[in-house]
Image (cartoon, rainbow, N blue to C red; front, top):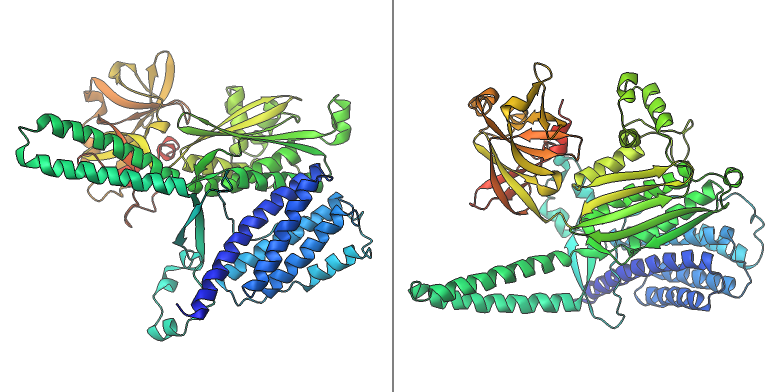
Length: 596
């Protein structure tokens, strides 16, 4: 390895470690605001700033080192009461952190990038020397446009950490197809070595890797045992069955453990949500207490990446929409300081994330009137709606209770995007609310999307998979209970409840994206010729009963990418390999539930 290559490697390590440190600095800064006299917080903040300064200088990033030096001075000035730990100065500290995050994201892709820190360094100097006179000015919170990174922090400082990297190039991923042609050889040869492919780093505790290696060793031993027994299966029948049973158990353990390698703690995400809540409260001139619980819960990193923006929108909504201003809270006999709670816990195979507040609560009648005025529902529909149905109107596209658009809300698209994100993850949202007491949103999502339990069904001559999380129950219903609603719609009565009957044969035939899914597949078996109908019953998207030709069984499902022919179809979530080795398609039931 040449000296230049070695420098690039240690610069990559420095940039990733600095990102980790900045996440920690942000969490400590939020804690500092609550406890401005804590020596422990100041000491750790100063240490992190000092490390950034020294390491940055050592690897050739003088501009980052200089920024770290000034940041250390600013923190020490607050510690020594030269600068007061007021929200005004802490706002500026967060601005410095945002600037550093943006700089690090830029340097990861181009280590020769030019950074301009002069304005922010001059601002630090002005504040250090007392020449800044704008402490009472209204805060301006700026959303940094930077890459989002998740970091798994080990609870044991002495534990070794192994880093796994995966090359990702966002510029290529989002470019048009015509722009993805490989570069000519001369372009590759002349590529600037300082411009490297962006690498996402996942930090894994070494004991997890050790366990994985030990388990693989056991698997090799069992495989060798089977190799010996295969020459006389009849004589070794009992031993073969015992070995296969051990191998099945070990494979399940390996699968579970391998999935845990991609899981990260929610603590970094909670820090982002706490920061978003704080900034929103400053913008709305409200005093908010933030309660966090369950930050050490682990979840698949893909889920965190998908949910992060949605959770941020929800906490901002809680501050902007739900929490009353101080005067109104006083009139209602409440504490002038509002409360926003963020919690996470595992329940079975799901992760439950709750966003709660002690604000004004949801008003069903007001929601209905707003939805009617925006043309989302008709007045006749509103009369029949339950309270829960009214609550879920807030997820409709274009719905907002805000009369005017602000920096935080009012466009009527945020909560719709939240629901779409949760549905994409095969999750649900529950709402509990009481007027003038508060509201709780409970998001229920699977812990991992890579492997899940699914039901294999046959529709026409094809096999499909439906995630068990989408299904309330499975059964057969009699044709006699079928209720004809219109020429194209039917319903079915199940235990005194009415369910909309959705014929998946007709829906899939109309999609026409499975290569051999022909018209005959829906006409071979007429609905009125069957005495019993196998159905998948779901209450997740309202009372729905999905008609199929047969229910084959259940199996563990491993997601695979779809082919180019059908990957653009929203009806299909992913591909998989079925138990008999044949390919299958995983269906998005929520799309069929709302099929036009």
